[in-house]
Length: 273
Ligand SMILES: C[S@@+](CC[C@H](N)C(=O)[O-])C[C@H]1O[C@@H](n2cnc3c(N)ncnc32)[C@H](O)[C@@H]1O
Image 1 (cartoon, helix red, strand yellow):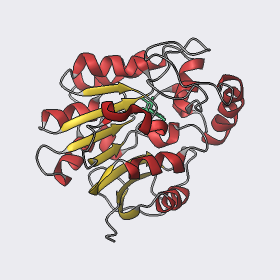
Image 2: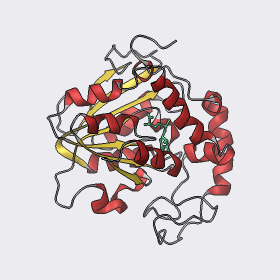
Image 3: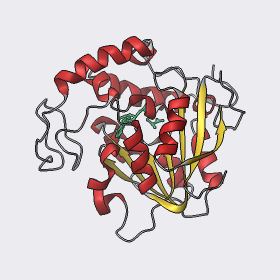
Image 4: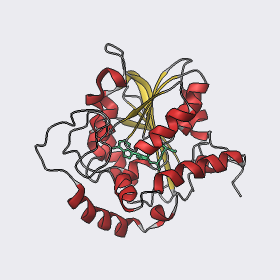
């Protein structure tokens, strides 16, 4: 049974067999696999959106061919049905009445009406779709084409981009209109940070920083036992130019402690503490 607070709100949610592997061994195995799946340095930028890369995967729009493969993609490479099951699992939970909107409610409460929001690692669009329904202008980016397809099917009003947000700049005006001041909020929820390509956390956070409006905030949530240490995250966020202005252990804002198994961090660029 789901908790009254709803499953993603608590953050204590098992995503499936691939995610239950112990983090250290998991990273080790994936790193070995990545050595064989990462394209050569110096390869040209992917020529056409929607063209498969050398390994036969659909290349994310505009990303350089030598981009690092994310841990999520490595999971999918090993288990090609993983994404379909992920989509179906959330569909089933929604049919069963689970509360899947906790993250969206928090983000909505932080925003003025009709704000511009980036859903980074949007998956099948659970969070961005709900934020759009609440009147915000949402752009979702995800590197998994199966999940982006599901998001487009279920939430056609939203701009869903098949891209790697380690390379946000190459998405250009598809990401946000030229001349816009940036996103009012970036939400990165559902353990996305633990599925990045190893070694890209800092540059991903710098990309978030660069695409936020001056008063904008990024909200990042992930399980603390999944291979990305929260202290490292705080350090990476500061290096990227963020202040961590609040930290919680759930999306309904329970306090964060050093032994919390989940972190929801609110990052600001405005120098507030
Ligand atoms: C566990 S899923 C969470 C999806 C969604 N946020 C949710 O809560 O339902 C993690 C997602 O992060 C995405 N992801 C990881 N690294 C990424 C990157 N560098 N660029 C784009 N998407 C990425 C994966 O493709 C995957 O869809």
